[in-house]
Length: 226
Length: 237
Image 1 (tube, chains in turn red, brown):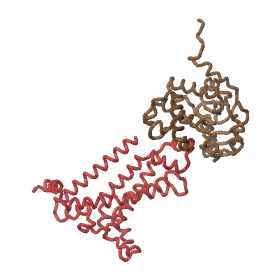
Image 2: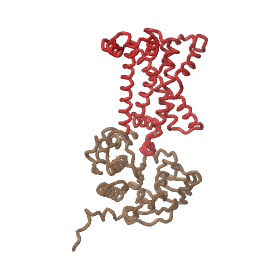
Image 3: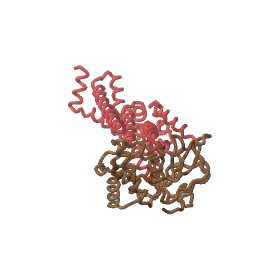
Image 4: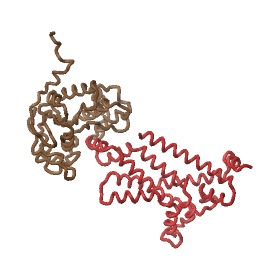
């Protein structure tokens, strides 16, 4: 059978393993994005709104971290959660928490950088308007988040998209264990190396659909902001 | 009109780096008066208005609000409001914008509704409550920003070129509202304009600025309300 038709058949027939792998991937991506949201927003807002020595340097470092290879993050986290590492006793290596931790570190600079960039673009009159209307710090913060809600949504969707499509962290920290830590990207890599294209293609199609959906949402958010 | 100063400027200086933007040795804004700041673009009008509202801080000298330092004064913050030349409306509805400052002041919701409706009505914007604030014309934006400021019933109203972005009809409406507010008294108005005739007509006094310096203060005529076309007597010819 044509591998492409075979891949479509796997999707249409609702192949249990294909959809379990897709579900595991989305599960990891959801939690890593969720865990990066609060610190990411806090750091992004801090960088955008408060002047402190070294602020530009911190922003530059964060921006550089968005391009960090996933295997480097995998290696870094591995050194902490491997048996001989300081967090080895937690048993997170080759388990979902290890993957989520690594992906959180991957998502975090993306959220920080995009929130910082988005908030920096807010009109200078915006803050002056809030101040002159009497808003205190907390209300200004809430109003800023409301004003920039599409920027923030775009940052989180970008981070989600990035972790959904990564291989290095999932492979190094999850170990690609069947029914447990196997994700779409690690399965595609494995199946392709074995010459089993049908399932790799089916997951590729699903991954593409997810990427397109995320892109459409990001595009809609950015367009709404404009 | 009360004669005591609500704002006192003393040896005020404002600089960007080494570039001096504003230098005013002394200026008093009397409670209840309408003071026009007149001058060409770049003369320091906007900077002075922002300094008077504590949106920016002086490089040197001081500003006193009712005899106390204006910097960080919560009274100044809650009893005064500044409107930009090109105002910024917050995301959401017109109602949210006009109600914003009242919510900050924890005004009860029925009173907020009353004040929002009254101020929108005053500026000819009665049907605008549910409109998206980001999809309005320049003139509508200017009038909504003024409605947002007037809803607060401020004791001190600071306006930067209040009619600069407006079409003729919106500008006329704003002039009428300001003339009425000035005539009724109770609100100190400081506004900037590059139009000396308009400023002098509306103001009790006009302060002329040139290149960041206060060059003279002249009494205004505040005759504008009486001169409005709709109220002008018919020509006998």
